[in-house]
Image (cartoon, rainbow, N blue to C red; front, side, top):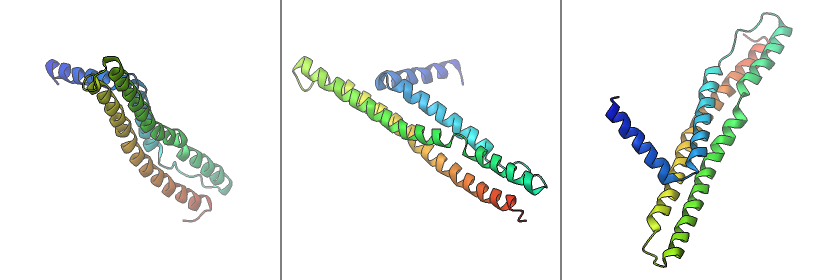
Length: 158
């Protein structure tokens, strides 16, 4: 990407953050943390080789199950938090809109900025939550399949 193109991208990102207001920072942090955890979880959704002896296999299976569940609760919480943060931004934007209407006394002035912030943060919250929810479900399904495989291997089945 050329320097001019990068400058345009950064200007658009800056404009997005300014339009969305202060809730954009925690929304971005939630989104980055969510995707970091999803990528880590995806990378760890595989089984390590099982030991040959039965007692070692039970310990191995317990450790593998714990690994498969790592970060699951935090991922679900982050996915749930993102739209709530977006709605928080919406409420803040609507408050700003009504404050502006009160200050100017004319319902045709001061509306667009607050509505823009409200809609931008709602959009960002949904943009974080929707793909995160889909990925979490896909990873959950893969973890369930691996857990079933762990059970089978721990019991010594071929």
